[in-house]
Image (cartoon, rainbow, N blue to C red; front, side, top):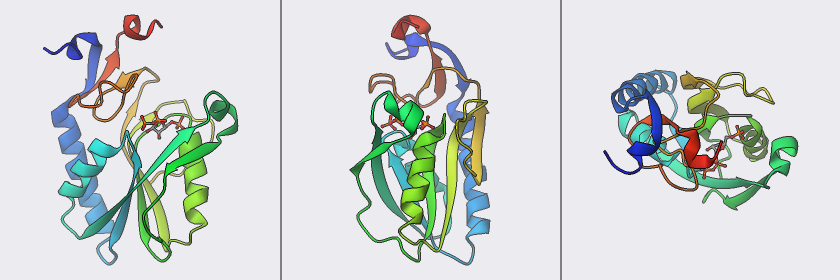
Length: 182
Ligand code: PRP
């Protein structure tokens, strides 16, 4: 057990469950995009693990782009204003975009991002998220593919961090409240 594992209260989604879910989601995407090539747009940094495993699970051709966004501190929680830290490297007009997120909490980040990407004229745009927090949404976002609905707890692992740590854990776990003083 690593020092990071020792700070986990409980594992809510195992590495095997993640692997199985990704295979299932990839099969749906392959079927849904049988006649189109999908452009995966990963939202850094949290989606890095999910994006790379999802891309490897897809059987059909796909391409990848990344974006990094950041909320403006606490005002984000009310206004939903987002700052672009790293933009896409290319034009997405006419592309079939699938936005890849690790988690949807309030939905504010994604809601802003969707408007931003929509203005660039993609042929279609859908969302896939590995996790969605139950009952936490402040804004409604239509999500085509959801891996797991999870309780409103402080989760880390498989891309999700606390103070930039824990992203490398192969599972999703609830962080002990003693770690963040909650
Ligand atoms: C997380 C996550 C989503 C967002 C979800 O990113 O990856 O982008 O928060 O929260 P919301 O639905 O309440 O807007 P974070 O800002 O923690 O950045 P990171 O991915 O680099 O860790």
